Length: 109
Image (cartoon, rainbow, N blue to C red; front, side, top):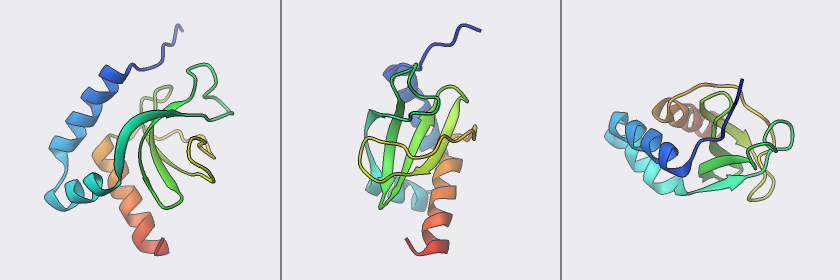
C-alpha cells in the first residue's frame, strides 16, 4: 500500500463537511476550541507523515486527524505540538467533537 499523508486542502474539505453537519450548539463549541490546522508530532506511527493535523484543543485534550486511519481522534497532550497517544478511530469531525464534549462534561475538564 502506497500511503500518502493528507494535504491541508483535503483536510480543509473534511473540516468543512463536518462543520455543515454540526448542531448549532456543537458548532459554537467548535468555534471556541478550533485553531488553524497544525502538524503535531506523534512518535508511535506519525513520523512518516511528519505528524498529524491537530485542529482543536480543550485544556489537555487535542482533536486531530489521523490520516492513516482516515478519521478524527482525541488524545491527551502535555505540551502543544505533541500528541500523547495514537488513536485508531475513524470518526467524522462532528462525531469526534461530540465525544470530546462528553469527555469534558463527564470528567469536568
